[in-house]
Length: 146
Image (cartoon, rainbow, N blue to C red; front, top):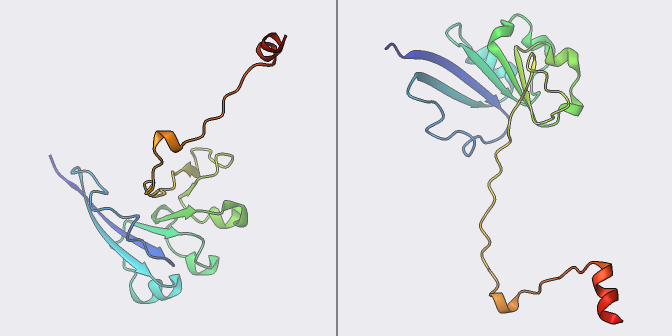
């Protein structure tokens, strides 16, 4: 079985260390991923080449005029605040991933689940320290009071 190879560039304006685990892809694919923490104009001028299969933008960090001329099927956008981005801008991409269920149409907009690392509770109370609230139906209380 041949292993399919992909060249992917990720352009971001924040640190991606926690979002890119080593086991990101299964063994069926061989991915060469480069991550750039810089402006898109700088990336396009100094680092972009024709061997790239996909360009992932982590947020709307590129002006539309800089995206023009790139193949739409290469461009993928991840949106954290889709309310602030218009449809014309999103139309410059082959896929737009968002957490907003109202936008998901499985044609241009796709659902992504934002990973949130939640720390474990460090100070757990003992059972005797916990205060529980009990709820009693109104009818039960009335019978007991009579």
